[in-house]
Image (cartoon, rainbow, N blue to C red; front, side, top):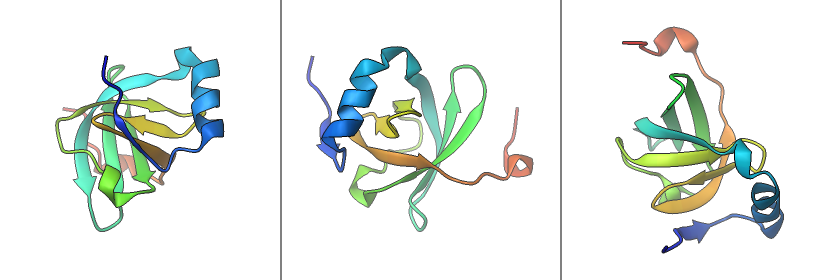
Length: 96
């Protein structure tokens, strides 16, 4: 298996993720805001999560499958990068 290119993931983050493998949450990229480097994820459990990507080169594309590790703050897809929870306005998220 080819591992994704890694941007701005600290060794401690990788260790935390390896030590907590059940924390990964799978989903799809629903929207991307390049100006704020935020990504709206639609997780497979139906919930939505907005994260801010630390490295703009790590922004995924809409529709990309990704995995998010909330403890280690890693967003993995074609590129693996640091992503922290961003504030979210739940009124602006469609549940359709």
